[in-house]
Image (cartoon, rainbow, N blue to C red; front, top):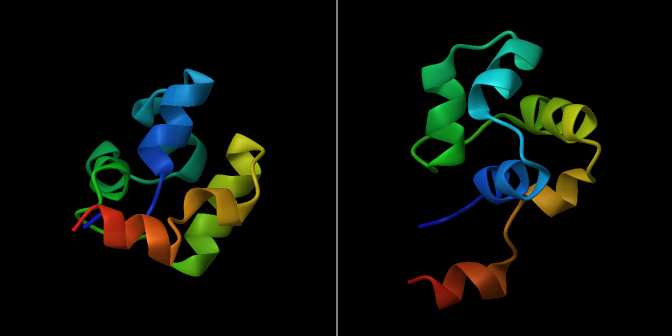
Length: 71
């Protein structure tokens, strides 16, 4: 199930997961787990990702209707 759109936003902006991991001071494997929806970031981390990527935190989260479509 897809709970976040981190990978989609990174792809749209042409930003690598490695770059984001350095900005967040987190390992690449952690950021990759966020991007692949194997692990969900805390709200604090999600807020930081939004700030770094210059997007509203809401744009990083899938809505209920979108989650239902992917089931």
